[in-house]
Amino acid sequence: MSSAGHVLDMIKRSSYNASIKQKRVDRMRKIKAMYEEELLRHHHTEIRHKDIDKQDLERIKINIRHQISTHRKRKLLLSGVTTLVVVIAIYLFSKSMVLWVL
Image 1: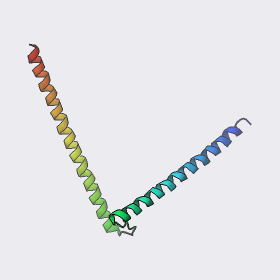
Image 2 (image 1 turned 30 degrees about the horizontal axis):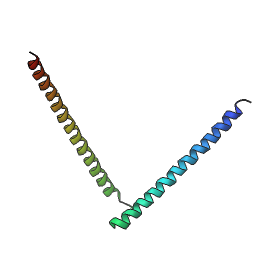
Image 3 (image 1 turned 90 degrees about the vertical axis):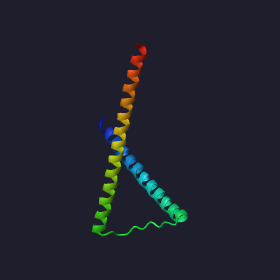
Image 4 (image 1 turned 60 degrees about the vertical axis):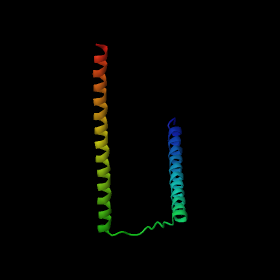
C-alpha cells in the first residue's frame, strides 16, 4: 500500500499542471485581446478574422516563405563576409606583429 501515496501525488500534480496550462491560455487570450484593442484604438487598424480561400492562403504562404528564405540568405552572406574580414584582419595583424618582433 506504499504506492497509493505516489499515485495520489501523481494525480494532484497532473491536475495542478492542467490548471497552470489553463491559466496560461487565459492569460495569452487576454493579452491578445488587449493588443488588438490597443491597435484599434491608437492605430485605427481593425483586425479581421475572415475566411481566406485556399488560393490566397497558398499565395500568402509562398510570399512568407520567400521573405524568410531571402532574410536567411542575407544573414548567411553577412555572417560569411564578417567572418572573412575578421580572419583577414587577424592574419594581417599577426604578420605585422611578427615583423615588429624581428
